[in-house]
Image (cartoon, rainbow, N blue to C red):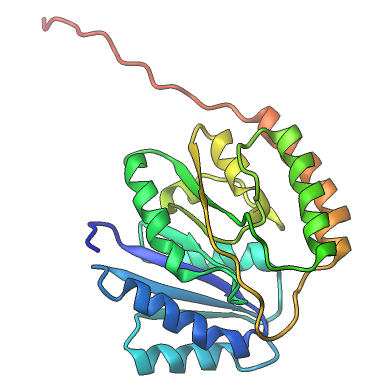
Length: 248
């Protein structure tokens, strides 16, 4: 796999010591023939050895890595922002730190991204066959239907952590807590293109989810209202070509 792009895989992680080593190893093996890549781990105030485990695993593999630690937890969206700003790559892939996203899907996103060169875009993963509890799937199904009906972002599964977009695109977006759930809508709001790729979803092997009905549901309604207002107020300027003038 060859590319002129530098790829940064950005992973926010909190208390994922038991999952992070396997995830880094899988990413390394998928991208080992890629010309330029790095893994960026943002430890969002973990109480375990997530960061130390990640650094040791990458060292043993010879995997290029950056590690950043928040002194206290500020949430997944802020951890993503930290990692993307720190990233050296011009293309960003985001993944959850729990290992449920499958690194073997990364080439699918990269192949699809090749059709979107020189523009703002987001390639979003779609977990058609989710490996979550029935209650969690129900919550997500309702939330996705409400969001899609109101935002028209063209994405059936905005909660999937596996996404690809240019770093320059992300830096144009307004950002806020829980903003990671609205990346496709925000990218479309600045005139970018959205593409969807069906991806694998795996069982969480260790640890517990950081989300519950409150931070996934009720708080999300407030965020949705805010994003609707933001998109309504967003304007994208189109630069017109100047007419040619004769000298003199």
